[in-house]
Picture (spheres, rainbow, N blue to C red):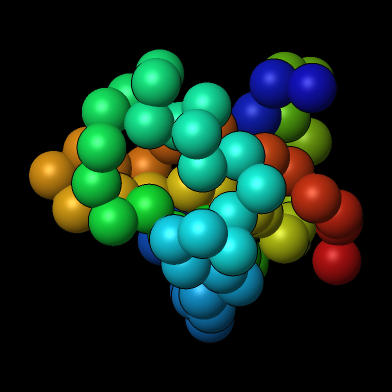
Amino acid sequence: MNFEIIGDITNIEIIAVGNSIRELERLRKTYGSGRWRKLKGFATISLDDRSIYEAELHWYEAHGIGKKEIKLKRFL
């Protein structure tokens, strides 16, 4: 499902850091080494059909690399 984030991501929480991330080795091979963290937050999103929802998002992030693989987890 394709979506676009409208505005800012709020209520950001860290879910996992470093070796606690199951996908750590793949992230390092794909994007490079860094201090990887898995985070979650809430944002307003727009879907392909232009409907607008509040949703929970999860993503991976490392300093100097940025946000990667933003996933829509659920609608609120």
